[in-house]
Image (cartoon, rainbow, N blue to C red; front, side, top):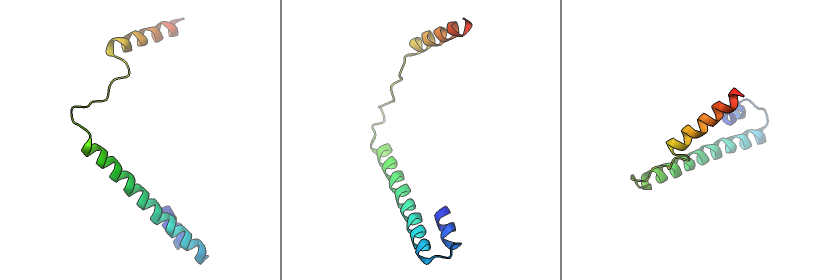
Length: 72
């Protein structure tokens, strides 16, 4: 959007063309990114969940340790 806006308000035809192509390229890249994310979401098995980096028990231990460190 910004490239298109700038291209309308510049006096150089060459710069207008460059900015219009930048705008078109940006739209194409965003569309491709959205399509990739959609494809990944649709093909991902439903039973697969993100594993937690720490179990709840380990999380509580780490939180308690951080609380002890702050008290010092």
